[in-house]
Image 1: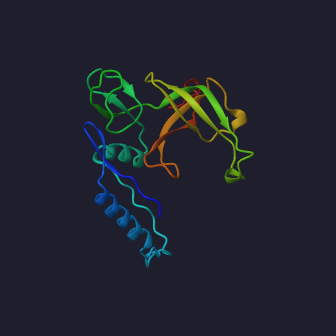
Image 2: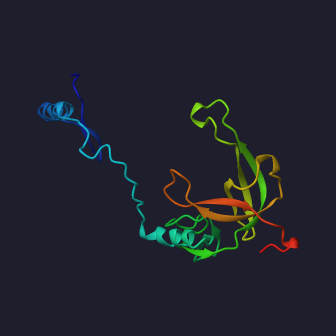
Image 3: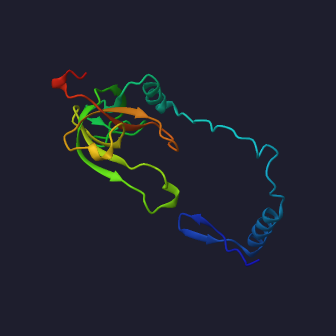
Length: 186
């Protein structure tokens, strides 16, 4: 086994370990490499991962479960921000809270995602990622669902929602089509 060079970080930089410490660490690495790495007894059991919810995430998860749309809002300057738990305001560094928002907006720009040459995405349909300006004045990106990619247009009225996408750790913004206000949309 090649020698392992180790050190500790100090205020003045990296301090090299003594020869005795290096030997002890090398022996520990060898011991780890040689231990039994067989799978645990329940390795074949399929379990659902548990969602870790921080205290600052609880309001966002509650809004998603109740199908309400919320945005973060600065308590100091009252700026609307993306729904991100526990982050300070990007304008004044004030603390933020979740507040109900209309979620109504229009598509400013969009990008169609296609994966024809990537084997892992074979068979998956194309979808649109949209940049939307909400009535609250904030611009948010998100996946546009419920609209064929050929039918997506600039200026299209949409409504934001919170959804948990597969592989995601927290709810994300998605957009759905809405009927224009002149036609009686709410």
